[in-house]
Image (cartoon, rainbow, N blue to C red):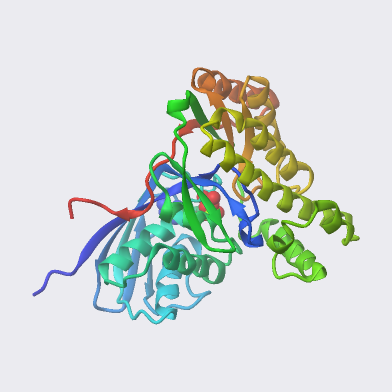
Amino acid sequence: MAIPAQLTGSAPGRVNLIGEHTDYNGGFALPLAIPARTTASLRVRDDGLVVAESTAPGTEPARFTVDSSPGDVTGWAAYVAGVFWALRDAGHDIPGADVSIHSTVPSGAGLSSSHALECAVAVTLNELHGLGLDRTELALLVQRAENHYVGAPTGAMDQMASLYGQDGHVILFDARAMTAEPVPCDLAGAGLSLVVVDTRVHHEHVDGGYGARRASCEEAAALLGVETLREVQDTPLAEVLGKLDDDVMVRRVRHVLTENARVLDTVALLRAGRAGEIGPLLTASHASMRDDYEITVAEIDVAVDAALAAGALGARMTGGGFGGSVIALTATADAERVGAAVSSAFDQHGYASPSVFTVRPAAGAGIEESQ
Ligand code: ADP
Ligand code: MG
């Protein structure tokens, strides 16, 4: 009897250096793949079933048919089922599999553990069945899985970062062109550290305010007579905002357009070898998310303020918002002190202790070597 085909692939979580809630507006973002990864080991089954298990605490093994439809599988396994569904819906007649998941990406921390999981399954299925899909095609399929199967209306930035990440580079993602361009970002060489504070404040994109923000942007684009807000990026800001009556909508649009500009300014500084000067752009991004887009929460703002007070060069929430993680750019010599200052501020506010660690730009998704 033939031994069933099996393969292991993995995909990283991501931190978004800057460019938040811009992807679904056709704009720019600047994420990096992080060293924490999700591994998916797959073994082909010939009985039309997918049997999935994860080492993540609180996950039960799941069994479903390979031709499940959105709504059939819920909970964590929906992220696995969604990838099978999206591939089959695109005409790839793939068989079932045993799927084992192991991850070091913290879940629900704004580091995109959901996309790390989906991308790990997607790259492995692509290779296992010789589908020949490129990384952009995989990103779009994963987006369909997350939007239509899981029910989270997220853009494509997270998948593009996880799939296109490169050691020592951030990825300039242009959502309109669907391109991912590596930009050198040697933080260590510049004497810099990127500190991540996972506030452990829970957020769920599925039922959070993410969809409402997205709807507001789409409504604004319709009022402006354009397909996405990207179309008005080069129009003077005051002129664009002057065409909108609703104060909330004005602030939402202002965030998106100024955030796109901050991404491009950050890229220009990185390309000029001036990584140490991007801090104020990160901090301005945070103020925009807090005041205009209104997606931060008290714990997040405390973390940013404490990091800045302790000497961080810049700090901002990263990820979709309503909790999750904060990043702080520091001189490497200050990284530990900044992390400790945030922990101590949390203690003073009576918040649960955050998890503090540093990240560096790491490699994107791939098949594990030695197979
Ligand atoms: P984020 O992507 O920012 O971590 P999400 O709420 O989008 O947050 O996704 C987290 C969800 O993804 C978890 O609740 C779980 O359902 C699923 N998930 C992520 N990583 C794993 C894993 N290793 N094993 C099982 N499920 C996971
Ligand atoms: Mg997610």
